[in-house]
Image (tube, rainbow, N blue to C red):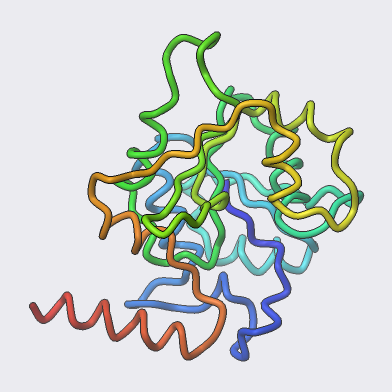
Length: 208
């Protein structure tokens, strides 16, 4: 699922989800990588009907994307995650932000493969940790039922840190394989200057 309900306050060009990189909008790039990894119709969480209509016009109908509105009793990314978990039918959800245009399906797979087949041994979430110890809850896989059950422990204004604290069993995965790939995949773009740096990087790779 993709969290796309933010107000893009630091992004002077408008809604980040509709910003473009290498000829594609952020939302198209993110959804394309999600579909390549999960083979499931993506869920997009938005805050307003206006956002839903704008993004619906951008996303190909063939992708069978579903939209949900953020849970009104929470704020920020948690509001979108909870709505998606209440809507989805799969036992697990991979959550990502719409502002991560370098998302890579191979990095998604590196996270998802850590979910054990044995349900009794499975954690409630698998959250990658960077080489510098930074947790990446917006490039992580969550047990859907655990998120729904955590709702009673969350309050308006809570962040992902509150959710991770409320969960009983989180696998903080240090992904030593393909570190450069994972580092790029978790990159989020909040400002135009950050977009310019990412675009320069993409252009450089194309010319190599």
